[in-house]
Image 1: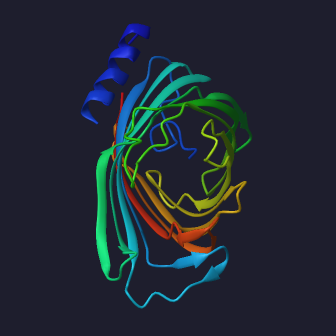
Image 2: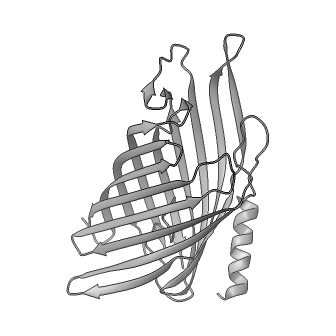
Length: 270
């Protein structure tokens, strides 16, 4: 599969449909390897806050988001890949009306397309393997950015990540840091750190505990932690389920926090 096929793969992804890049953040690690994966993510929150102060919510106001992440990867060389991510978003919220009472607002559509170029230096030692990596990224404005409840901010944004992994037959340690430079003057730049510690309990499976911190320059914060289960069925089909429980949150003004998240995904690689 050559460069022309890469464009075709990403085009198919675009028509049909934070820092993990290859399939399940694992493979392909071989030349001309490629794959696709789908993640269903659900976020929910009824935690209404002003800054770091929790507000009463007698009307049961809430916000929910369901994201279908469509993602593809192609490996030019073991150290160089290209990835594409295109989420489809279904979002709805119950909000208070200025004149009294409540109403439900919703919006469905594609979010922005993210293209990335993960570059990794793999290391192998006595009984362990791992990598150090950098990931330049760009987010292209293909999502809906109009109305009172937009999905996208309508700007081209630039991101950069650094990643680390060390693995043996018993344990796995992962870490990543990402920063996004927002081009919309009304949007705050965002940085995140993700750390995971896992146990390889089977040749095909691992259990990890992951913690993620995301902060915006305007003061918004999301700190969450939880388990991740990964399973490799046959070196072609892989699955992953993740849950993160929010333990410390802050909003920039008055609004809902990001809340808890649940992600379930399946990927195939060739």
